[in-house]
Image 1 (cartoon, rainbow, N blue to C red):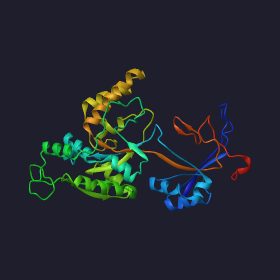
Image 2 (tube, helix red, strand yellow):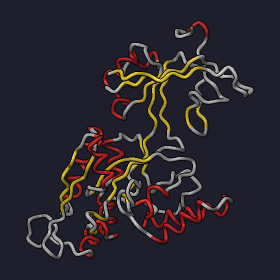
Image 3 (tube, rainbow, N blue to C red):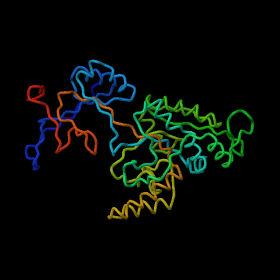
Length: 343
């Protein structure tokens, strides 16, 4: 389970006024989840990031709580999860090239229920690539809440009806509305099974398509999928060029869903070339409004950071960027009497 480590050593020639309090920082790469938790229990590592159910369970674990401080927070750089709808495959438009279909799929995706039942409340809805706390975000925008009736109306408008009364929608040529949703890990499986049930209510047939990450990456790079669920990281200000600009639909670009909107391209180009924040942010907000309308992704949620840190680590504080672990000038430290790695 242990795949090695990365070690950083304090730079004695660092020019800043505040010197780091640690001589070394060591990251251990542990691929197996149960081994990672055991390593933390045994005191071999000093911090542990948990998944929602695990976090809720560990808060009731006397051994863990006796040795740990615990934190749950939403950093302003929290990334987001999404479902990407591939709009072109094999040189031909797919059913997801129709904006009405993508909007319908977003109305069928009950994000609030996903957050409540699967993320156990440790997440918030993602409306767009921009964090809700960012100046790029237009606070007047409304999310796509679960609405079966709106979804059904949009799908009917797009030409989908249950023509043979088998419970599955068909297009005007009689082709059933069925697709594969590609995903790569067990954590996502529960969500995909929930979505399968939700979509079936509108006559849309989802086939879960689990893949190991290397295989999934191959599908992604070749743009050879119907729909895919993944996530992106975010920043204080997020540049969306690589994900949504039409130039990035080419080979090796990250616009893997083949989404193209000339108006959005223009706004992205303008925003990236505008230095003055007061002029740049309205451009990003216009871009956000287009993405919320177009729904190239169904934006799902942003997860909270859920972590346990050994109580030996002192002066842990929340900052505007989140927990100050390993950041200057608000530095954390281990009192001399509690140090065990000092060499």
